[in-house]
Each structure stands twice: as C-alpha cells, then as structure tokens.
Image (cartoon, rainbow, N blue to C red; front, side):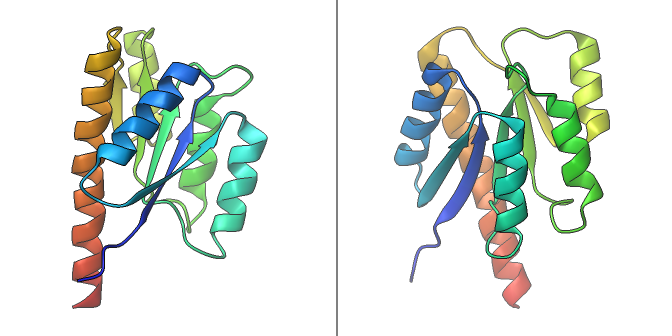
Length: 145
C-alpha cells in the first residue's frame, strides 16, 4: 500500500519551534512534508498557489509571530471556500483567555498551550500531528468510497 505524503504548513519564526516541528514530522508514522513560513504575505501567497495544486492537510500557527495578525490570516482562510475547511492549530506559550477565544472565533480548530520544556513541546507536536494526520488519512479514505 502506497503511503500518502502529508504537507503541513507551519507559520512560525522561532527556530526552536521550527526544529521541534521538523523532528516531530520526521518521527511521525506517516510521511510528512513541512513547509515553514514566517510572515503573513508568504503564507497567503503559498495558500493561494496551493489552491491550484494540493493544499496542506494541516496548518500549525504560532500566535506570537512578529508582524503577523494570526487571527486575520485565519479569517481570510475561513472566508475562502477552498481553504475554509483546513484544520488550523494555533499555539502559544504566552496567551490570555481572550487570545484563546479570539482564535476560536477566527476559525481555529484547536488552541494549544505551548509547554516551556522543549521535550514536552516535541511530544505535544508529535501527538497533535499523529491525531490530525490520522484524521486526514481517514477523510481521504472515506472520500474515495
């Protein structure tokens, strides 16, 4: 049976977050390709180009990106019929309850409190990738039935 390669779009600028996501993607039991972008323009351009090909099966977004309104990106994605159903996980190490609420109101599927410990962060990434990629694989199987 051929294994599907899943593309994951990571919107992050912290090198430690990016490294942890790469390690988690490499350790996943499913084939993953991690596309890392660190600014809103690149993210929106990438999503626009991807619409004409294959969209990512998951978007991981750091809430605390410099010069990026994560909620604006989410709203734009949710208003576009092509990207409206993409699973988006927002994460942050520093946040308020209002941040969590605004993330969900903007269209996040999940908000993750980023642990300070890098090993815990790696475990969290791995478990989230496993959950969401398994979900994407199941949806693709159901779509072919």
